[in-house]
Image 1 (cartoon, one colour):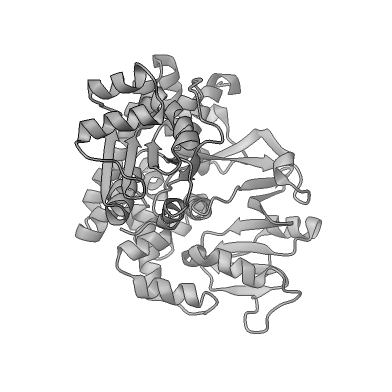
Image 2 (tube, rainbow, N blue to C red):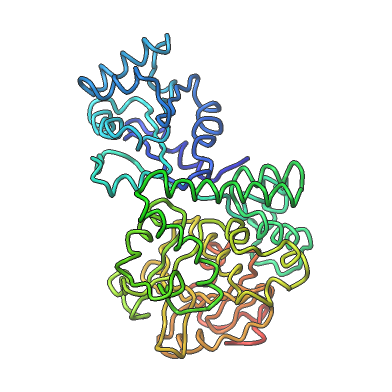
Length: 452
């Protein structure tokens, strides 16, 4: 299974001096497999791996009693494994590092005193633990974030390397590809959790995918009660279970009353923060202005939306059957386009874009806006081939952005600053945006039939 993050991991490996690496990400996104198997075993002569979720007593004693200076730690690790730890040849991995806080603290000293060693750490609930006053080595670690597989990675896992190469090299080609569209629908069903994708590639079993997704969701639920007190666990679960209903009502912001009748923000703020910190949900804020830089300065923290980590898990949580996705356009005729919107956000999040959304009173709402250099780009997600978008028209008339994006089932089209990108080509959207960003007028070969 190929992961795009490997390029960043190799860049970290090859630096002459480096900070320890911290790989963050929600539970079961493949952090351990990526670090240990894809990266460590292929690019190092030796991998020394420690899982801190159930560490040996000697490991606890090593870090919790005595100095955590690198020289002492390395010497003791060498005695334990019976081999030398050689800079450039050995990768040391501390998995679930949040479980032993002094290991996290020790990364500061490795950065300062032993930068020649390759030290990597991973943590599923690290964001949660950092809000519990855990000492964090600010400025002393390099942080990467592992998302679920995006659609491009899903295609590669399904042995579609030639198709990926064709689209990557020629993203502006206008053609309908049945294999690509079929794979896109499969991805909406499976999502990008590595275990689910691997099972689908090997067995193509709908029942098996449903079972695995249910197990992952239940593992998330068990974390609620495992790491917090009973009252907070109940509220976290209530927010978690309310997500499909939040989408179904097509609200312009998260409504606490959907979680529980009469609920107030202060009762559920900590629950939402826990889910965000755990990486289980994505939160995007509303911006008050759509024409002022930087966008972050104009966000409204009282108005936000929550999206799920993974489109496949969200489908399972919402109980949307595979028939709704596999039948032509059915999934895009119901559920207020919640699957398409979730998918686009997940694809853009894999490139670490910071997204917001814009609302003009009750008359217009643009799904996403983001800042690209000195430009603000609005994004409308349409769930089918009906691409009329009153809200995007309102935004464009008001702010006159140099480029606007629309993701839909229509083929690639451009007209007068509006670029329509097929949903299944989202993974080449950055190339398309770069190609079209500075055009002054419509391209004669890609005229847009229906401007919003």
